[in-house]
Length: 285
Image (cartoon, rainbow, N blue to C red; front, side):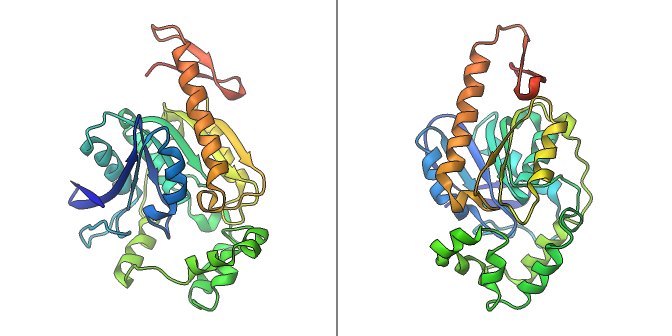
């Protein structure tokens, strides 16, 4: 892996493919490798940059507290550090929270924004799904014996039956106790984020069978982002890029291609056109 030095952190990333850049932001318990198959599909069309967040994978950061704001700043610094003015950004789960703050806080760094199976920045996950998160916390204390039940919150039962190896994902990770504590505390740190401030053309994508983050919560984000479009993929659980990377990649590519075509056919001079749902959005940024 390569690294970019920024914000006192050595940000580890992989880069593949060619063309316009797209940055992939992983979930809370993962690292960049969750995008291996998904990224390979996108790399046929884009320069794919998948990186490890603080206290994840090969990234090295100081042992000081941080929150979503700092992680969004890291993503912006990575884009700039790689020599890009801006990039498409795909964030899933916690990565989608980081992507929201990135797009509102550093609009000049985000071209098109894709939010997958995520939740509103500043909202405690416990309040989004109060029946699930306490149960997950209890199950994690019983690992590795509880890995099979944990998996059911991330993948549909039919997928687990066909691919029982996915249970191994939940048997543990490489983070030490201090890293786990800092990651858990990051969500509790206050972060101000105004979805209405996001100017990037946006797709909000959900798996219809997501048991972790209710699809209705994720889709509600689109109501506050001008011109945002929505997609629900039948049969998909929370970790769509692992369960069915082809299905997620199809929707991502369709959005990016359609948006590029719409933008190219919009007259110069700041004209507007209609996005999904009939809401106007800027086509030239």
